[in-house]
Image (tube, rainbow, N blue to C red; front, side):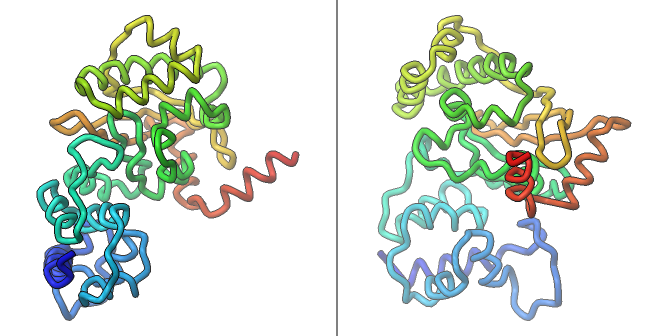
Length: 287
């Protein structure tokens, strides 16, 4: 681990970013260029003290998970991400894998959506980043580990996740997800993670196996969804999908059609955020 070069690289990358680049308000006039250190810590989900020690070259070796969070916070491209890992004494993650590097371009687009739910997912269904509106609409979806990072895997193995959609929509959602996964796996020939995901799903779910054997293929570019929310009811939204050139990551943006009830529901969701979701869910279960 090269502590001094790591500290210098982090500081210089931080100074290149402005609050608007990461969806933050500018606030009071800044005496120094770029983001403040506590803002990078906030974006990376770490303590300000730990990040300060990184920039002062007096921290212990950061974990790969911490480096991934820093790469996202600093909007590093893939080459810069790999350099960060090397400076910290870790091998760079593979181009494909469980630790997908989020496209800086998609992150900038995500930052721009402050009034609409939006999230970035991998082609294998791992929810990589959500904005606050997406967390409010869908709940926290980024905390899973292993195969459970994939929403597709959870859809077929965790009955609780299906509460997001009305029961009459479950068949359609299953078909769409399997057809989209078929297309994604074809773009990952001999990829260990993709093979592992399909094998695990076939072993765990007869429904998945039956749909997989139908060999239907349909890349998801847009969809209409009904989301069951515990506080504001069922929200009818359009889901628009923007895909990277490599087709390995997608930005999903949820919008309401003008003149529909969903417009007011999303506005209400924007006000209440995710602050009382757990309380609301618990109260509903107790009724």
